[in-house]
Structures are given as C-alpha cells and as structure tokens.
Length: 108
Image (cartoon, rainbow, N blue to C red; front, side, top):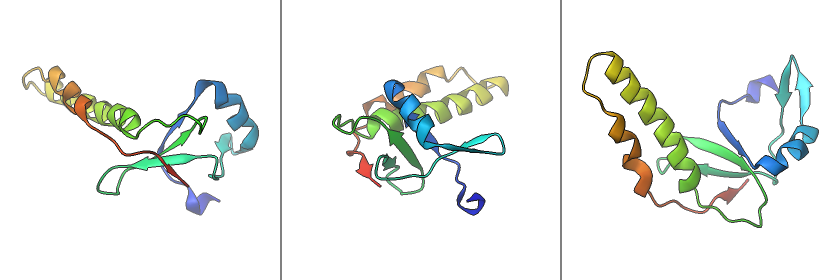
C-alpha cells in the first residue's frame, strides 16, 4: 500500500526481468512489487542504506558488487557538482571505493 512505499535501489538480473514484471501489479501508472523471499537485500554497514536484489539465488554475489555501484553513483554526483562549482577536477575520487569488501546478500 502507499503508506509502505519506499525509495530504494533495485537490482534485477537481466534474464529475470520478465519474471519480475509478471509478479508486479500496476497502480496509477506504476509497477507495484511485493517484496517476498524471492528477493535478497544488502545494506550499508551503518544500516541506513538498503537495496534489493532480484536474481538467481543459486549465484552468491557479495554486497560490494552492488554497494560499489551505489557508492560510485553518489560520489560521481558530488564530484560533478564540485567541478561545476569551480573546484578542482575530482573525477579520480569516484574509484576510491573499488577496494571495498562486502558481506553476502541477505534473504528477506
């Protein structure tokens, strides 16, 4: 329901996208998903940033594969903003998180 709507990143395995679409319903022009045990999740160490992963669970990717993408996205936004404000070119900062080691994804 609308009261449980959350803003979160969702990673979908390409060949599982159609399966996920079939499980969704449409409401007000949006796809509505119910998070079930078919999803895995990861979260930042501080527990504040959580994301969902829908993929073949026989594969066992670690959180850092997804976390790095999210981290790079926000670092890139910050470095782009800093550059537009006239600060030095900070584009190399984007790769600083590449060495992070993650935990396994968790079942819902």
